[in-house]
Length: 96
Image 1: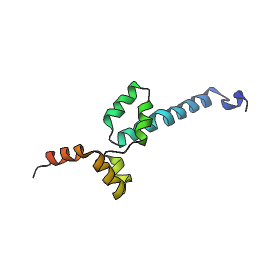
Image 2 (image 1 turned 180 degrees about the vertical axis):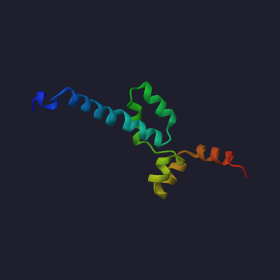
Image 3 (image 1 turned 30 degrees about the horizontal axis):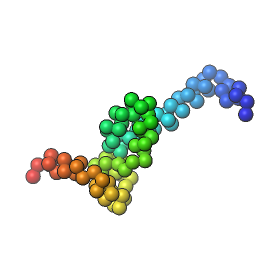
């Protein structure tokens, strides 16, 4: 395919650029935030998004939106075993 066929106009080139930016940067950053990995979300800004891609493959924190909505009981139990400190914090902040 000839290079001149990929971007027939400036508008198409801009649309390609925005689409690529969303797929490579915004998507993984959103996943990192939804998984509750806030330290890795912050680190992604310093590593140009590489850490966000790694976060996408990691287990989400059990209290995160990702775990509550997308994990079944088995995977949620794995998340609770992996991040027990977050459960302790929730219990300490809940008044009895």
